[in-house]
Each structure stands twice: as C-alpha cells, then as structure tokens.
Image (cartoon, rainbow, N blue to C red; front, side):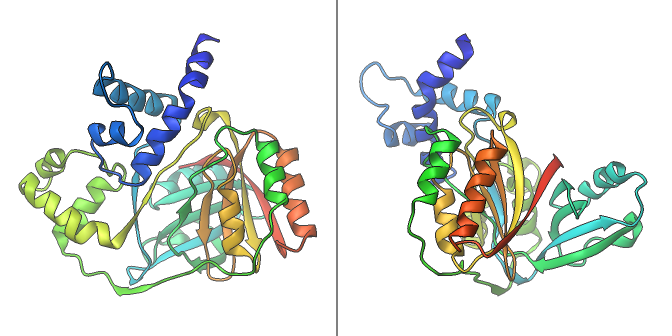
Length: 309
C-alpha cells in the first residue's frame, strides 16, 4: 500500500520525465530537470536520477531503444507463423526468439509473430509454416496522454472522436550506407540509447569522441527512438494483439495516444498490427467493436500474446 501511494504521488513527475526523454533520448539529468521545472533552491539533480531509476525498477518505462528506419536494404519483414505439428510449440518459440529481433507467442490462428531482417532466418529448421508475411515499416510507439485515466474512460474518449480518412505514411529509403563501425555502434546502443559513449568505446576499439560523432552523424539520422510508458508497471497489464484493416489508420493511431499505456503499432503493407496494453478485455473489445460499427475499422483479427521476447 505504501509503495502504491508513493507511485501515485510521483506519477505525474514520472510521466514528465518520460516525455522529456522522448524528445531527446540522450538528455542529461540537468536538462531533464529543467524541462520538468525541477530547478531552483532546494531541488537536487540527484532527485531526478532517483526518479528515473525508480521508473526502470518498477518497469514504468524502459531504456529508449533505437529503431532502424525502413530501407530497401536491409529490409525488415514481419511474419506470422504456424507450427507444422503440435509438438514443442513453446520450445520452438524459445528457439525462434533467439534468432529474431522481436517475437510474440500467440494464442489464435497463428502461433508466432516475429520481426527480423529479410533472409536472415531459415524457417525450415524450426518446422514452421509462413502463413502471412509483409514488409515491416518503422514501428510506432505511442506517447500515452491518457496515463492518468482508466482504460474505460480513455476508450470512451476514443469512441467519441471524429476520425478522418488517411493511411499511415510508409516512407522507405534505398540502401543503408553504414560501415562496420556504424553497425557495431548501433548494435551496442539499440537496446539503450542512453548508454555512456565510454562503455560503447570499450567494446569498439575507438575513442568515445569517435563513438559520439558516429552516433550523431550516422546513426541518429537513420533511426527512430522508441520509448515506453506504463503507469502501473509493464507486468501489471494484459496485452492483446490486433491485425487491423482501416482506411483511417493515421487517425486511429493518433487516437491510441489517448490510452493509459504505450501502444505498439506495426505498419505492414496493407494493414497495421497493434499490441494494446489494458486491464479489461471487456473494455478493450467494446471499444474495438464500436469502432468497427462506426466503420473506422473495416475488420480486425485478435490474438492473445502468451509470451513476448
């Protein structure tokens, strides 16, 4: 109970820190403090460091990640897979997850949703069938302005919106012009864009100044930052994965910003995948069905993630 009281009292500060870092993944603690108005006599920079550490420990947020933008080469693909037989379905998921960038173990007509670079995984060795596949455009991770609302309240707000027709933009560039050092820096920093340059330098054999220069000049222009916010902690929520067909993609994704938690959006070639965090499947499905009735959504398929890596 005491822990929950502390969380509630500081939740607005946590959210403001999240927004500050979302606007600049490598902002210093001093800059974050300035952004959220935590400056002046009696306000210590160490307090912001403690808040940020609390957020990581409670899994209210995670380190900001680097996401490569969409390129013709390397090209990222999304796959929905089915195990050819019913043996070792979960064991296959565990083996698959070690070879791909992201994996969901699903309950539904597909067993797995995975993302990876094209032609980097031999699916035959896992005895799985590719049921559907698509180019994966740069994923979107929403900044949840509904962090202080219940899911029920937020979903009602979404259903009351006026939606405009329009698909998500799916930009794509040509060939990624990185050398081996750029690729190595990206691999070392993609899971934590705030990692110290000195630590990256220790694993690349170059100076921290070179790492910083390469990061700012070569890495950042070719990447997006992904940041996440879960007011009550990541593990508190249930997850439901949707494949959505809609002529209102852009407005729909914008509406998902009103939810309490970050929504993961995966733009495919002809639809979008959405992983929505919630506490009530009834409230979630009520919202989705109403959006379908209102013709905002043409159709959707729904899956329950059983495990995510």
